[in-house]
Image 1: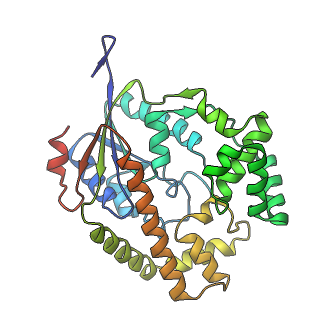
Image 2: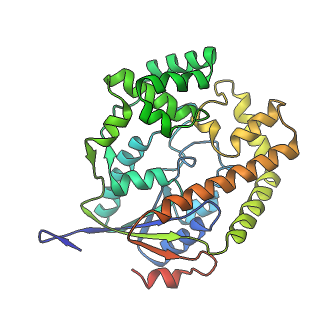
Image 3: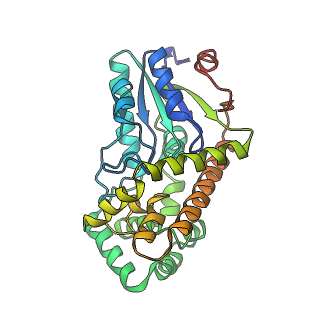
Length: 310
């Protein structure tokens, strides 16, 4: 594609709901073409969180390296803004080596920021975040949400009281800038990939029962592979808590409750499956609202069908 006489460099984006087979397809594509994979997954950025995030195995990563995996300790937050900065750096490096970036993942917020624009928000401030966390421990996140509603009712209407990460970020932005995050998000939007030719492929299953069966099968495999031990090891570190973004990832949040003795094993399983299905539903809702997607059914998709679109 050309823009003002300049040929835009290509990027391929492969997205879809959790457990639809994105990783396997991406690996196969990278072996069939000169593609380098960039992970678009807010869970895979964390080190020592391998089983519950369905992170590619060491063998898979050896045959098809993924960029932006294992780049952050679970004790730290990783934002969509930081992802855009990191992803753009990796995209430019891949193009510099005369290869094509393959963006793969299910974190639709990250894809949305890359494809449609990023608000000019301040970077995280650890001192303010620590103070907000301390306040939350004293008064609870419901009260913190009410505090947000007083200064930014628009943002509070969009953020659930059960979402401490987004509540904290909205309050942090207000404390840093004196302006509501809803106002800043509306203005100063910067497009990240406008100078690239992006081909977006969405794996959207026609059979929802097929996806739910995949979710259940994958979780059973996670349990057999030691997922609960993984969460216990993270919990035993002593520097993590259940309110941190890393520990609020689907599966980890419920497993933490189990180790805290708040729920039994069967309840934990049911809650993980329900939360994962809800995650898939939200991902599909994002995708169905986007234009210019090449939609494929993960049940029948193949390397050949994807290559036929390139």
